[in-house]
Amino acid sequence: MTEGSTARPADGGGDRAPDRRLRRLTGYALRLAYRRIRDEASQVLEGFGLRPRTFSALVVICDTPGLRQTQLAEVLHMERSNTVTLVDALERAGLVERRQVPEDRRSYALRATAEGRRVGAAATAAIEAQEAAALAGWSAEDRAALMRLLAKVDAG
Image (cartoon, rainbow, N blue to C red; front, side, top):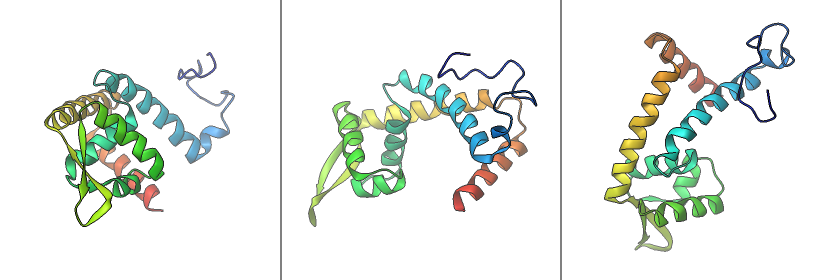
């Protein structure tokens, strides 16, 4: 394996893997799983001119017309300054537009353009297909259980 490689050790991470103690830790196991899904998703999203963060922002904006930038930052757990950069990129790509909020001239409401809605829907379908392929050997019950358990971890 090369540095930064996402390949697994030849023994599949068994009892002799150099990171065997780490693999017993929930956080480490989540990181490995996340990295695999994220790397595959990144490849899929490249075809749409998106990255995982811009995809997430676009989907939230498509689903919540009029969302303010500060709300987007909260939803995505980002610093507001990073959200501005993210929205700038989506706006340059013609996927979203900012509109000043009449009652608060310091705030901007975000809306997806027609192209943004089209790209958001197509990218979402591609990501859903990628995830289905990644979990092809899993039953629907196992996938639902994973989502329930991840929600529990997120809730604390």
